[in-house]
Image (cartoon, rainbow over all chains, first blue to last red; front, side):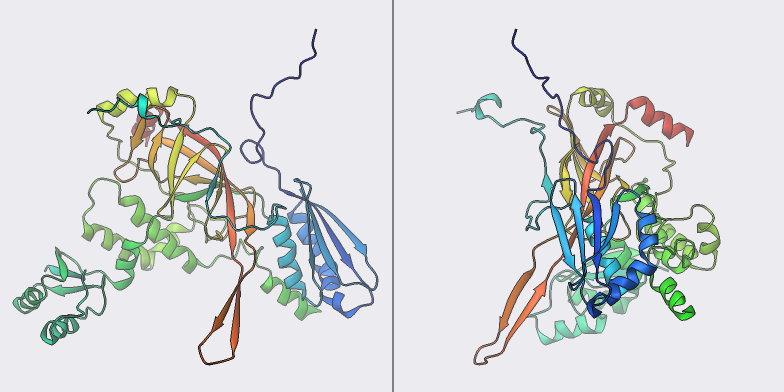
Length: 137
Length: 87
Length: 224
């Protein structure tokens, strides 16, 4: 007997039933010494706890990155990463960047011209000239 | 008291000076501007001079500029049914 | 230190749900009223305007505020339930169960008067950044011009009654486009101005398209 895989009847789509935020992790890298990390350090001290409490579904890690510019790196459920350098930014700007990474979906930025993207089959089927009452000559 | 609701639907460009002057007197500066005037013979005469350029309705009450704008603004078509927790 | 905390509390825009300016609420609500009235049968123009006028006067903050505290003033609030009973045509009553019985459906939902022809599970990239929503929110789309299945289509004039269907969309997040640069140059002049722009767009996922059964529609009309 041949082993057969179970065929999937439907494709799981995030947001149709359950919803998972597409950003799963945010890494905050800072440097204690460098001036470009000033805003980042202030953000880590003052606003990060609140930001983390507001977004419990995102794993947040903080780690030093000495003698480098501060970076926020987001990891997404599609396997991609996005990193933003936040050198010389103020605390509020850093928060904005963190929110940007939280709301993003990890895809590469591309220009989209069609607003609707669908994986469903056409509801009304493909039009055929032979099944539409025929041609009256 | 009823009012004329006058909307300029066609531009006055290329019209004789007299016609453009009537539009100016009515306060119709560009297309799709709407003005309200009480129904009087004077206004009726002005409308007659530019009747090819405007659409006229008789209404009971004049609307303010913001109300006219709100009328034209389309419905958003959505509302927030259940919000995600946001602190 | 104190000044810093004060500044932080002022600058942080995500918190002040409790401190809502009622002036924000007013035009939103008033407009809403206007738009819900328009598809109830033939309200006279004067009635509409007079109600608007009373709404904008002193009465409004007291009446609006205790009803429901909105989470944010930027997103439209749920409209008041429509009290008028729905007048369905006999042919619609006959065909609607057939339409609902077919397996898949599409809907042409209008957001800010722009139509989006969607089925359940589709991703919609709105051509704008929707203010005041966060990922995970569920929006109810209540304007549609047509609703159909393989063999049947219900068309609105110009919009369908919003009690016929339930369409929900999930806010998935915000996307951006690649940075656009445009070089602006005038003739006979060496100066080149480079303009940059990068827009943000809200992504929605159509979570559900449901067609209400005739009993539900008529029952809701009577109870309200």
